[in-house]
Image 1 (tube, rainbow, N blue to C red):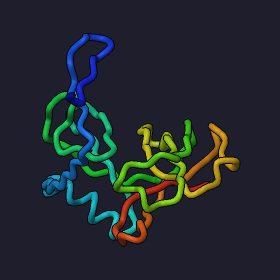
Image 2 (cartoon, rainbow, N blue to C red):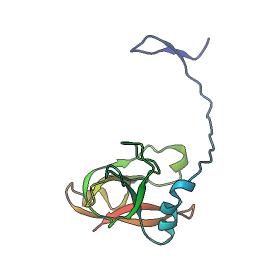
Image 3 (cartoon, rainbow, N blue to C red):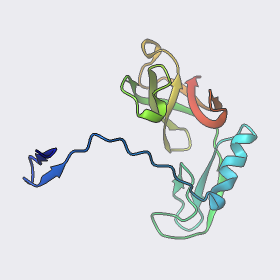
Length: 151
């Protein structure tokens, strides 16, 4: 007997393995290191393409729209409004040591959408409310990242 199932849509045979695959990766951030330096300074940055004017968060070294490498760094105000949110009960293994948490999508006043954890109880949240994007230290790992809080 093999752990094989049939894909419903294409009727292809699929192997379903019960073993876990742990993947560790290293990614160069040299072209966007200003973003990480900004977090160390308590600032959150995006990039804006000098050629077409499109703004990107997370920052992009090359504009996905026009493929130009002429981008400038823009410090974000952090001010925005809540678009939507959800509570995460079933977490990926890398976040399994955390209690259930809330993830929100907010639109910054600069016009970019940001998905991040929000430091608020779900019953306190309402779409359209003002929120603030801030630098946070993720515990227990101790690294800096960004997250939402109520404004």
